[in-house]
Image 1 (tube, rainbow, N blue to C red):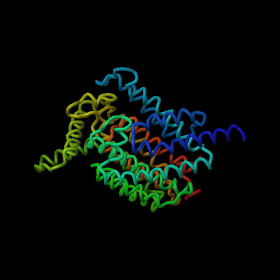
Image 2 (cartoon, rainbow, N blue to C red):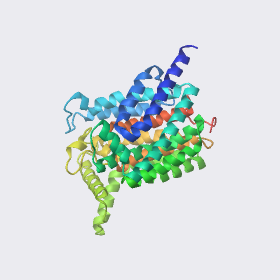
Image 3 (cartoon, rainbow, N blue to C red):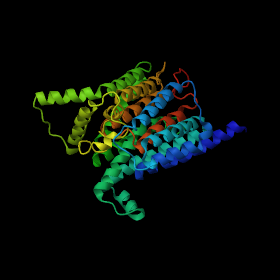
Length: 398
């Protein structure tokens, strides 16, 4: 077998290793996704390619990366050392994560199917584990943490297990279709979905429970309208990034005019406060923004980040950054357009909208493990589809 065959086998074995580790990291150490995807990309660098179909998204990402790096020169947040530089990290993540995506596409069919089976069974086991952890109050997680790291308070253990439900909610649509494509039973979706909902409710994570229903709605819409739904979703995502500050200001003005003071849980009340402060500060530098990672300098009005991706992009990168983010989302989702129903496109769209949901209410744009989770989703789509991943086509529907 020639050089191409050796590379395909090598990428396949790397993909198998990733599949083995993903469920464990999702349960015990979500921050490990960043080094996992970086290592996978490094190992699969020989597979790095830039196809004509990929070029538009990558060009916009490169321009956005350059703008983010330039904006760091006027940001009030100054990293203490190069290891803390978000611009440097993003500059390394883009090629490494793209290499992992290309490697997943290039993996040999047999090993690719093996990886998809391992991942599906592993995430189904994670779903069952989350149900058990919900019933026992995180007993196994606390025991393992105390045995190998240090004792952990039950509330902190619950918070970490709640984060696991975010990962499972994000991955289950693609893992389900991957299971069907790789030869594993489709019913593995049930423990993934149920485990997400039960764990989310038990560990006070609202968004993952909503995400399971959102995935079903988005997936069915893309299957029903394969040519129009992806473009509509892409347009919706782009519009949200462009108009979010205006939406927040309009909502606040309406609440004040009507003297509405809703009683909300503390976490949601804090989010509304962050969003209101962010919208005000966006008005000071609406075009260029305050600079990369400037959100960290706005405490106590904002703690770390606004917990809303469009607002964070506006606050730090201004209108230019918001337009670039809108372009990335529109290009990524609209290229899922198909002439006929395609389960891979439906699953990819579902995971993309879940990522958008979580970014709108939970995570910061630049969180390393969360960016790695996005790269993992694209890599999974590539592994399921192969070389023609995300390319509009009437061929090879599942």
